[in-house]
Image 1 (cartoon, helix red, strand yellow):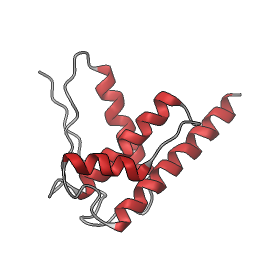
Image 2 (cartoon, helix red, strand yellow):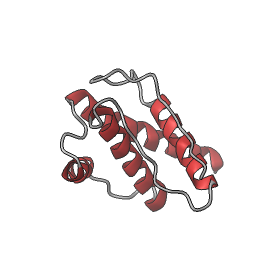
Image 3 (cartoon, helix red, strand yellow):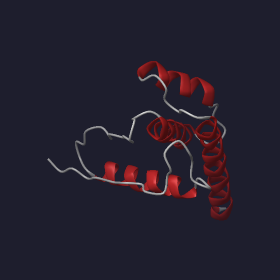
Image 4 (cartoon, helix red, strand yellow):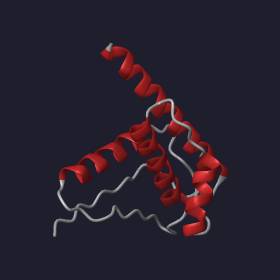
Length: 121
């Protein structure tokens, strides 16, 4: 079995990066690698405690995937998505800053997708 290990070093414990571009690029890289391998298993995400940064990454990935699959006009519900992951592991998305970072990342992703689509026309 092939195992790929990725680490994102620019994320302080209990804090957030200054802007979400690096995280979005990182997730894109991981997901592209995942899609390129046939019969892959799940992506495993973990930080020191396994809830703050981990939950934030997972929620961003879920929301970006929904937008990829359903398009920019789809309905997304960030609080509901966070509640869903919290039912699976208590405390996911641990701080207010991480909660806001999810919104920033989704907004930046949507804006980048809109720009990309405009440039394609």
